[in-house]
Image (cartoon, rainbow, N blue to C red; front, side):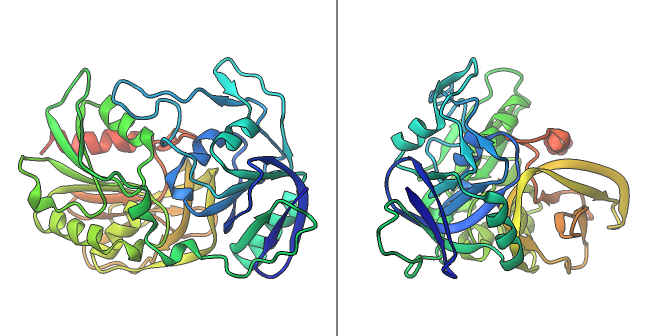
Length: 368
């Protein structure tokens, strides 16, 4: 037996699977029907207990852990599992897929991550939607006296410093190089972002969150800011470097946390969402260059708990907005050189509607 105990004392009981250990974190939910290996290895989930709303999780197993020719994960979004635990209605013990190498339970156990199955995730999700995300603790023994007191709020510290690379790493495209180099700030970068850039012939210089642009001893053509976990206002050093990039007029592109950091760098503001956007079916409306909504709507993959305030400085406009709640999903400058989106054009998991934004970024580099 195992229990999930929320900060208000609400308890959800179930059966333990994965690693038989206690854990705690911020309890959030994801509405995706598939893509659990990618979600669990997404660094943006650092410090969180992830609830899957889809009732059956694990039925196609988990692929083999191997690295590609560039030395990073071939099948996952990072080289480790970043969630603190998972909560599901039914964890499938049996699995079937031609790429599967392990069951979800065995994989979680290998990485020391606990899970609870048999939970009414509909009731849990309704509570999180009404109250907002909550801190919680997973306890393995149903006889153990425990509560959620003392659970650390992961957003109270700089999670980006935990998940970023520790030194600069250079990746050269194997074929089709366009002769352009991008400095990519790794704030918890999903690996398919790197794959997407390399696929388009871009040389990627992946750097830590606090890398000083002035220390780079070679030329570069653009700056990219990745996704990542936690409160964007903790990333003061990244914000300083983005401001340098903007002041130099360097083409700058951000994704997810990168959207929030770009907004802060230009004097905008961010705020915490009640329960965030985590799933693979979020509709976003594109805006024209004047910031007015158009009829172009794309379905996007999302994973964030913070958002950008719609009040932006002169010269900046909203680029995308969420069709469900109207929150800002992208910003851009009138010059066309600085832009960012809140969703994930690299998908994994999720739809590829927004994949064209990498081509737009590539086009901006080639026009430089």
